[in-house]
Image 1 (cartoon, rainbow, N blue to C red):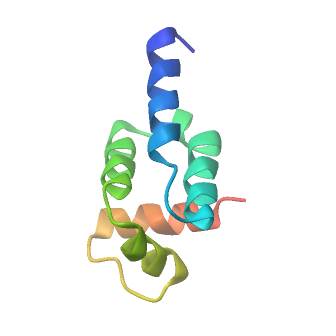
Image 2: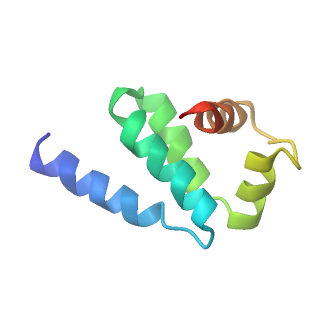
Length: 83
Protein backbone atom coordinates (compact mmCIF):
# COMPACT_ATOMS: atom_id res chain seq x y z
CA UNK A 1 0.00 0.00 0.00
CA UNK A 2 1.42 3.37 -0.96
CA UNK A 3 1.25 6.53 1.13
CA UNK A 4 -1.75 7.92 -0.78
CA UNK A 5 -3.73 4.70 -0.26
CA UNK A 6 -2.79 4.61 3.43
CA UNK A 7 -3.90 8.22 3.90
CA UNK A 8 -7.19 7.52 2.10
CA UNK A 9 -7.81 4.50 4.29
CA UNK A 10 -7.14 6.53 7.46
CA UNK A 11 -9.56 9.21 6.24
CA UNK A 12 -12.20 6.58 5.55
CA UNK A 13 -11.71 4.95 8.95
CA UNK A 14 -12.32 8.31 10.56
CA UNK A 15 -15.45 8.83 8.47
CA UNK A 16 -16.68 5.34 9.48
CA UNK A 17 -16.82 6.45 13.10
CA UNK A 18 -20.51 7.02 13.66
CA UNK A 19 -22.81 7.75 16.55
CA UNK A 20 -23.56 4.04 16.92
CA UNK A 21 -21.00 1.40 17.74
CA UNK A 22 -22.90 -1.16 15.65
CA UNK A 23 -22.48 0.99 12.54
CA UNK A 24 -18.81 1.53 13.38
CA UNK A 25 -18.31 -2.23 13.43
CA UNK A 26 -20.16 -2.81 10.16
CA UNK A 27 -18.29 -0.09 8.27
CA UNK A 28 -14.89 -0.99 9.69
CA UNK A 29 -15.46 -4.64 8.83
CA UNK A 30 -16.18 -3.62 5.23
CA UNK A 31 -12.98 -1.54 5.08
CA UNK A 32 -10.91 -4.38 6.51
CA UNK A 33 -12.37 -7.19 4.44
CA UNK A 34 -13.76 -5.79 1.19
CA UNK A 35 -12.48 -2.29 0.40
CA UNK A 36 -9.17 -3.37 -1.14
CA UNK A 37 -10.89 -5.69 -3.65
CA UNK A 38 -13.88 -3.42 -4.33
CA UNK A 39 -14.43 -1.93 -7.76
CA UNK A 40 -14.40 1.83 -8.24
CA UNK A 41 -18.19 1.72 -8.61
CA UNK A 42 -18.63 -0.13 -5.31
CA UNK A 43 -16.26 2.25 -3.58
CA UNK A 44 -18.36 5.14 -4.84
CA UNK A 45 -21.49 3.52 -3.44
CA UNK A 46 -19.74 3.02 -0.09
CA UNK A 47 -18.86 6.73 -0.01
CA UNK A 48 -22.54 7.51 -0.71
CA UNK A 49 -23.49 5.24 2.16
CA UNK A 50 -21.15 7.10 4.50
CA UNK A 51 -22.95 10.35 3.64
CA UNK A 52 -26.30 8.98 4.90
CA UNK A 53 -27.71 9.77 8.32
CA UNK A 54 -27.06 7.29 11.11
CA UNK A 55 -30.71 6.68 11.97
CA UNK A 56 -31.51 5.87 8.35
CA UNK A 57 -28.47 3.58 8.08
CA UNK A 58 -29.53 1.77 11.23
CA UNK A 59 -33.04 1.14 9.85
CA UNK A 60 -31.57 -0.15 6.59
CA UNK A 61 -29.06 -2.48 8.22
CA UNK A 62 -31.62 -3.81 10.68
CA UNK A 63 -34.13 -4.36 7.87
CA UNK A 64 -36.70 -1.99 9.40
CA UNK A 65 -36.83 0.10 6.23
CA UNK A 66 -36.20 -0.66 2.57
CA UNK A 67 -33.19 0.98 0.98
CA UNK A 68 -34.56 3.22 -1.79
CA UNK A 69 -31.56 2.87 -4.14
CA UNK A 70 -30.67 -0.51 -5.70
CA UNK A 71 -26.90 0.03 -5.57
CA UNK A 72 -27.03 1.11 -1.93
CA UNK A 73 -29.28 -1.84 -1.11
CA UNK A 74 -26.85 -4.27 -2.73
CA UNK A 75 -23.97 -2.89 -0.70
CA UNK A 76 -25.97 -2.85 2.54
CA UNK A 77 -26.76 -6.54 1.99
CA UNK A 78 -23.12 -7.30 1.23
CA UNK A 79 -21.92 -5.54 4.36
CA UNK A 80 -24.54 -7.34 6.47
CA UNK A 81 -23.23 -10.69 5.18
CA UNK A 82 -19.55 -10.00 5.96
CA UNK A 83 -18.27 -12.06 8.88
